[in-house]
Image (cartoon, rainbow, N blue to C red; front, side, top):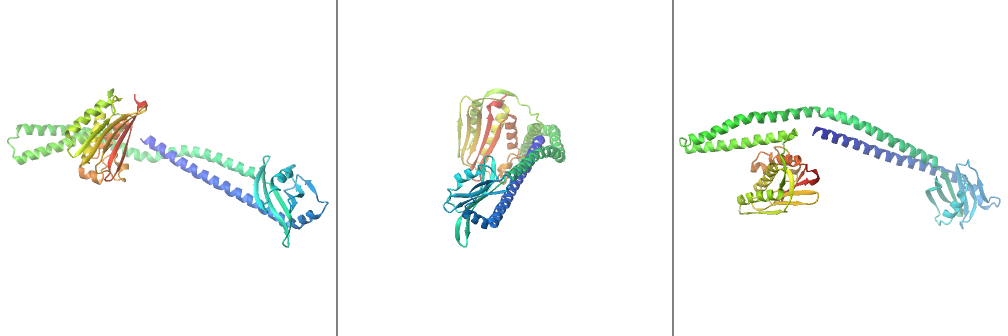
Length: 415
């Protein structure tokens, strides 16, 4: 139990930290990228503001025609007139002008800012109108190669991701160790409590057996010598002794379950017949104002401890009848190719939603359960039986709406 708890805590904290770090890296990548793009936009805008008048001259000087290539240029540009006819340009990437002319000169948009990729080169482009004193002379597309900045950002991001994964694994191991250290006191206290319950239950069985035998002897030998009140007290004492004996047996059962030494005498039984026989026993004792129904599929076999499965059904049916004054109780059994499903349904007082997560805890009793009596161990024992058989038990309910307890056994887990 503590090993699973330690593993769950380690996984929870490790993945929580990993998620937060990944979110941090994602936000960092976005902010850095945006800052780089904004800086490049500012550079291109500054270039335009500085060279605007020269660009106007380029439009009207005939000697400025065609493309000038300079691989060392940081910023390239292409000038075209109001009819989108290419006039002049200076580029730093060969053959880029042809791609720009084919893709963007037909664009009727007067201005834009774009991030594009051409032949694995990352570019930022802006289109601006060239005008002076309200007169439009033409347009210019200004651009810059931002591949190095983009690759730098991506490389930093991948390095951060790799470091995050490495440190998450390291923190996972450290977290597993420290989680083990943190739960040591809890584990020690739990083991002491478990040992006390087991030892106390064993020690109480002998005096309780003697006490119980003495009560039976008194009832047989001294019954005629006791007054009616004395006989009534003796019966009350016997009833309480029986309840105490049941409580001790329940505690011993749970103690064995905790230590994983719960002995199961497994055999291949006809679960359908067992369920029907239990249904008949409860039918003969059910009140007239409760409709006790069954929906049991024929021919279902299950390898299990027959006594424990019978105890499981007794617990669930006893609870169903105890909390249903009038209405319906239904016992159902069905099977598929992979699962066997047992369920007990009632239309009784139901369980408050806040209580459902705790109903399988030992000694837990909601306000309604306290009024009905009981030790609060029944559902704990039911869960222990189901778990010992490799199954799962679920409860769904609502206050005033009745309850459904469902047990699922996986056929592939049968041994």
